[in-house]
Image (cartoon, rainbow, N blue to C red; front, side, top):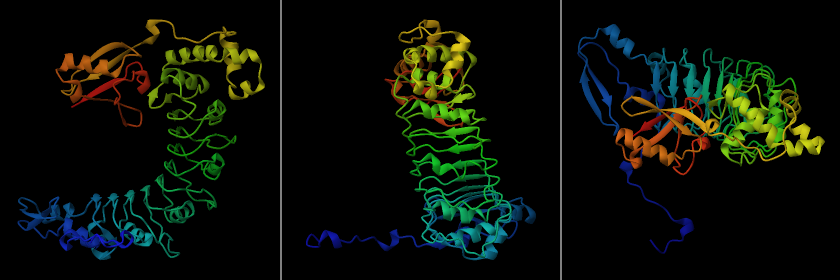
Length: 440
């Protein structure tokens, strides 16, 4: 009614539109109906939760039993709130290795752990989007013997709560805990000793010192810190000794000294550092500068660095900072601690605006993969606009530009879409021998 105060307003929902919470075992029974033998009816659950009966023909009882032991189990968005019949879960999930329980209604972490313990061969657990209100792990909780990968984005777990959970998962190798503000402190000694991949995107991290407790983990080789608030990087010597891949996209890094600090990570080979205040010039120029400052890195922003590009980067770097070099400012040599080595290798730089002069240096060969699987190659300037690529494909494939979606695949197997026709190839980090795919 219009006379009701908005502060106390209510909404009405038809009862048949509501879906009550269920137990894990109830959903398991509903989605994977028991099958008792040859010729019996089996129900397949449709998208609208209706069921279709099918008859199994030509299967032995042993075949049917094997089919009922689920290796990959998807229980996503099923409004699950509790455990249910543990015997049924243990029977059906004895061989389960991969479990997806994302976006359910779990509120108690112990309920989740009970389900995981009933799956003795479980390797991967996807738990994101379950907003946990009771996040304290019970003192009597068991340890899981095989779990290696866990996804906790959006669960609301704090770092200390995650650490308590981790003490019950001694075999954990990959952790994805993005999406919740984290304060990394009071990490118990001896946990996460096998951890290789740690994803802490969107965690409101801002102080590099907060990583001190994880920087000494003995096997950590991939650290994903994109979409945080880091403005400065300070690496302590002797830390992150096994790290090979680091992602820092979309932070607030604004000083070259932070890039120079990354040289203290001895095994770093793969780096992502796009969308930072430091990277504000032309994409190609910024890429060359970072390549020159980090000679050990072999992949930058998802694309490999060739020997020719590294040579080009060294020369460009020398010219770009020549004026500051001749000023003799001590701060310059702190931020650019490799510059002196390049001077010794290539000689004193000329003062003046750096440029990449020749058309030959600006040209790259790319492969365009058509929707039918066929490919053709094209030599283009790095400054070629995406809209012109659309026109080339229109001529070759007879596909209108508006119906084309172009992308390339980076080293993390992620699709990078060329979604701005007004940008050039360099903007999307496309270099020599990149394959651009056409999607319709």
